[in-house]
Amino acid sequence: MDNKSKESIFQNDMIKHLVANGWLLGKPENYNRELALYPEDLLGFVQETQDAQWQKFCALYPNNPEEKFLERSPRN
Image (cartoon, rainbow, N blue to C red; front, side, top):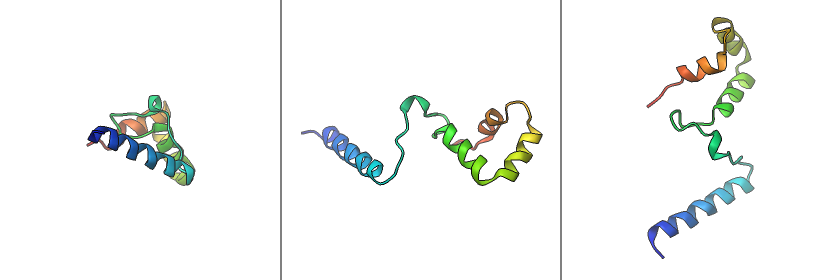
């Protein structure tokens, strides 16, 4: 067995463990590689935990605030 096969087995075992303990497995097609995140997760988190700040942001950017927020997210 080569190292790639061992790594794949380890990766799959880790994913199974995380999912079994409440981690949500995202769909690859929803992952934004440029931002290195799931946009809907980030937006949902901000909207649920920082409502007052999100409302202020929406007032500043009333036309598609979600897109504007993602544009302003830090990139490496």
